[in-house]
Amino acid sequence: MRSVRTALAAGVLVTGLALSACSSGDQTAGTAQAAEGKTLTMAISADPGNLDPQFTSLSVTMQVDWFLYDSLVGISPDGKQVPGLAATFEGNSTTAKYTLRKGVTCADGSPLTASTVAENINFVGNPASKSTRIGVFVPAGAKATADDATGTVTVTAAAPDAFLVRNVGGLHIVCDKGMKDRTILKQSSDGTGMYKVAEAVPGDHYTLTRRKEYAWGPGDFKQGQAGLPDKVVLKVVSNETTAANLLLSGQVNIVAIAGPDKQRLQAQKTFQREAGTPLGELWFNQKAGLPTADLAVRTALTQALDLTQLGKVLTSGTGTPTTRLVAPGMGPCSEDTVTGNLPAHDLDAAKAGLDAAGWKAGSDGIREKAGTKLALVFYYPTSLGPTMQSGAELFQKAWTELGVKVSLKPVSTAEISTVVLAGQGTWHAGLIPLTVSLPSQLVSFLSGTTPPNGSNFSGIKNPQYDAAVRKAAAVPGADGCADWATGERTLFKQVNLVPFVNATVPIFGKGATFDLSEGSVLPSSIKMLG
Image (cartoon, rainbow, N blue to C red):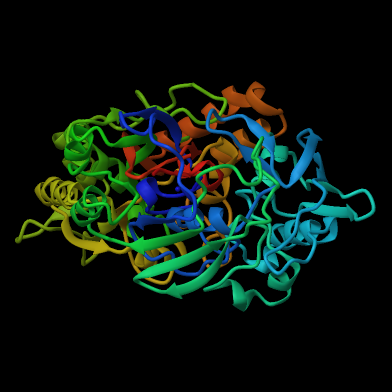
């Protein structure tokens, strides 16, 4: 979910899995020999939809795209910046400079030029392009220039960005043909990645073939290293129990399991990497005219919830309380911005708050104001396992007791993308885990323009947050952590969103080993076993 990457948790949503990584399990992988010429089958929780890497906010799509595209800067499994398409990189909060590796080619054999890289950056940074990566990787208004003779790309930001070099460096780079005709990117690819699309069967599987000439990264990657799969099959498996069974039977080599099925896979001592990710994140649609645009309503809805109990249900008792919005183990900041800044559980106070706001209980127990009932549509993703439904039912029970009519809406990843992220439907509240690896990657989701022209899908308007992040953005790296923390705290005090539990999502392997980069399987690290 590298996912940003921004992604939603466990391969569900927003910009990609940006997760922390550690290793455990698999007592046989250490002695097994690397095998050549094999096919890797990886289960993905939902169809990735449009494969264009500059028009997605889904972690499942970001995972697919890491097989097909490279970025200027790579992130190693231990979180360090390493060379990607760029051999060297440098900069500050307003400028960044990248010097490309020599010999990088696109899937059609054409050389990657600095001009094409600059075109990518300028395209994403132009608000008229409506790329979902603007403000996540490329700041709005950023300009890139290229020198093809020296292979250098220079980026100038319109406003300070504390993590400019890393953010721009994380953008998937599309080759020239794809930049000229983006329609070919929807179900195919035009990148410099290790693999290219051979077959796309939406809703079922995507087959990728390896480019044997690939030799450019990330980090210390060596061409021809042992065990790389010749073919990768990304199989859509929406049911976690089915996915776990396929792994145990050897029909799948890699699968991420967020729900209770992970326990039986761990009992088998299967090879495992772990990704820490937000799971319990409650968002309110604050579009003008909706009841959830009112702070009093958002406060009462939150007070009615026992967030500790909800966290235990969503994670089967294995989660930890959320302390900040950036994914666990990611980013340079460590401040606890959540504790003490959300409304405490107090049903009586919630009822009194709604009474004071004019929402009075009707004869049927449902609150009304000016002839309008307090009725909410609550979204939750089906791709995160059965605990999501149990959690959603607890939300419904608590809010019904408060006097709110709640309609539960289980939705697929595709529906979240169109209804929530693209703003094409009505919703009032939802469990929508958003995974990022840097605080700056949150800004476009928490402020600014709403869909379809921007990423602020819940319509947040918080001037205090905006002021804090402007101040933080001007300070390079970790030196601005105090200001990023101030911004987050203002969000919680205004109940713009309610983060309450993180989960550890194991990614299991059988017949293959691998490492993670910000929560996504790192293609260059995969080793097939004999």
